[in-house]
Amino acid sequence: METRGAQTRIEHIGIAVKDLTAAIGTYEKLLGVPCYAVEEVPDQSVRTAFFRLGESKIELLESTSPDGPIAKFIAKRGEGVHHIAYAVGDIRTTLRDLASAGVRLIDSEPRKGAEGLSVAFIHPRSASGVLTEITTPAPQPHD
Ligand code: CO
Image (cartoon, rainbow, N blue to C red):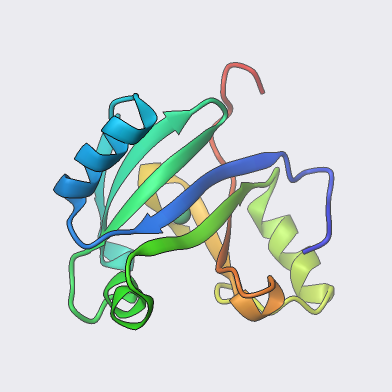
């Protein structure tokens, strides 16, 4: 993915876990900060837990369905890093720019992700094997 000015930072890193409650305990110990939100995202068949780390976040993802994308990922590759999400200024403009640059998109239109944000996924084949998410976050105090 080419660098573009509107792409401000890594918004979060998504980690696929088998047991969200256990993983929250693991990451609270590891990071030294409490999980600040647990939320179900029915559209993606996941339950998520978030940790704030400066201007980025860690998102733990547990499947709510045996057929969900996280369940399939864990069955194939085990627990681990699932995706990287970048903050972009305007998700629709970015999707249009990426599509015209020949980037393979999973979502050509934004959909609803955790925290009420619009998100879209880019195919790992267009990102050196990394499932890549873009999102337009709500402004933060320092933005
Ligand atoms: Co995400």
